[in-house]
Image (cartoon, rainbow, N blue to C red):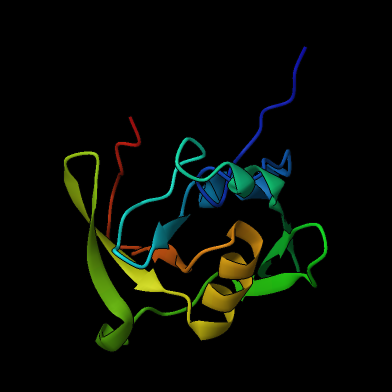
Amino acid sequence: MSDVTFQPVAECGHTTQSDAAAYDRRWLVVNDAGQWMSRELCPRLADVSVELRLGYLVLKAPGMLRLDIPLDVIEDDDSVRYQIPLRGQEIDVIDEGELAAAWISNVVGFPCRVMKVHPDVAEVCWG
C-alpha cells in the first residue's frame, strides 16, 4: 500500500503530509519568457524537495540554504499578478519575488521564477 503524495510545486518533489492536499500544484516554476518548466524541460526541478512547516512552504535543494514561502497570503497586489500560458490555458499567477527567483535560478542553472497559482483560479489542467 502506497502513501498518497502531493506536489505543492509542480514538477518538484513530493510530500506525504496530509495538510499538503490543499496546496497540491499551487506553485510552479517559469523561465524568464514566462514558460512553465516541466521536468522534461528542466530535469533539475527533481532536486527540489518540499514540505509544509509552520505556515510555510519549505523548499530545499542540494548545496542551497532552504527557502521558506508563506502559504496563505492575501493576493491583493496586482503589480505581481501575471498570466502565463500552460497547455492551452491562460493561468493567473502571482510572482513570489526576487529572493525566490534567485533561489530557483541557482538550483536550475538559468533564470526562472517561482509563481503561485492565484487563489481565484478554480482548477488548472496540468495535462
